Image (tube, rainbow, N blue to C red):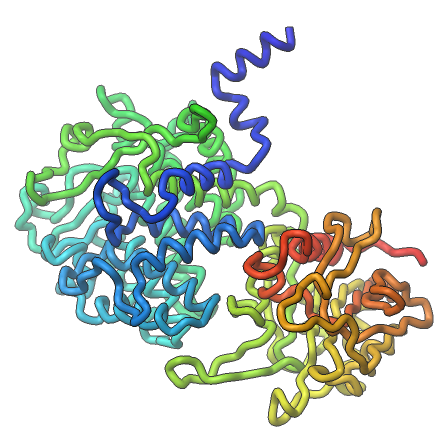
Length: 636
């Protein structure tokens, strides 16, 4: 009977959803790296083009990289973008004078590469794309035309192509006024394209009313195309990643999301959880359930729930949709995972002319492994693979100190920016990947830019202080004082979890930092252990004992040039390197303190780009995060 049961599962495809050994995101990424090994030549036999499709896939790869710390995914992004971005920052095949909003989409990956590597060529390439938006033609109300060859038109698609890049660029380079313009794009699109009866948005809007497809009164195209809705939804949740917390546009976009999501779930197929190509006409002959749109809407809903933009009950819709997506469209064929069911393209106008009719949409071919469909699937899969982990740290906040560690530098435009152990820094010295791990487990990240008070700390479950400044790093350091020690100690005693990360003798402030750590019975010695010469990483290997109470997954981690610890008065040694104590734990009232002699979990040692595979800092960071969320006492 068991054999018959397995055969039935294989036949229906249910086994693929329930019993996949590797996450679907990674299985699909393997297919991508096989199909497009060297460059994104989307049409076999033709040269690779600078196309928005690759940007969708590579954003999916970025998501996998953030979720795993596996450098293979970053290197793939880098390789694909380097085919186009030349040493002088020009972009092969890109023509800004075409004013095609689609061509902005890949800029998201250019910005990623700049933020991670700091290479000037990526900054120059991003500047080219940003400059297109400066001169891009607009409607009379200020909305970006979809393309110069489509005058006076805004399409839902264009919001995804342009606005997340625009928002990230504005965030990085402190173009605060740009967020008003970005907000305008979403507001105008909803204002002009939303159907008051259904809440759905039509595919396109022609301000001039000149197009044959445009309603002469409203300027709207005739149908609600599923993938257009998906583009618009993804645009909102991705652009919000970069909005300043207090910018009014943030609230405006969240309100649009809260009108958008109820509308799209009303037209979600009740049985399969998927969306039809023309979403409001499921019973019309020839209409079909479409993979890319379903993936995009699943991603939008799941991410909006995770970020707290919409009520959590909508997660049921995302889960149902994802199950249907995998069951109906994912097939393992000849040892390769493939995505079926994506319409290759659908547009408005052009030559031959596309009239936006239902018959037109049904005439476009449906294909296997369409790049944008595959990219949307990976994005959705990454998001859904986090769902079960969210409950681990739900309702908790991790607070990162920006007061005792308060370093600034000039960016490429000469503006002052904070750096070194910060959540938004993706370079070697940042904590962006650590922040992604916390987010994966449902913990909200926050910062404390002022001296700690009990009132401020009460808002957090976890507080991280790393490598407080010396006078070499900051002209006027904020040293830890007696009042800070009392406030932090009282907070821990009441149930807080404190993570203290020091550094070696040449790069750390000890006198004041030790006031705090010694109050918990843990002293940072002013030394430097585990020297590593150049990039001889194995020299910095620290073996993790079997059945370690906190670091359960890695066999070895990399920690170089650390300050050894001297635990006393009830503090427990948790990790040693030879004769030297590297980490210690102290239970303090209802709370806990974890102290370690090096900031060993910043990007350089988590992102998989440098360390050999046997040095498993990412796994160690995940284990530490899970312990910080739910600490348990460690016995001597």
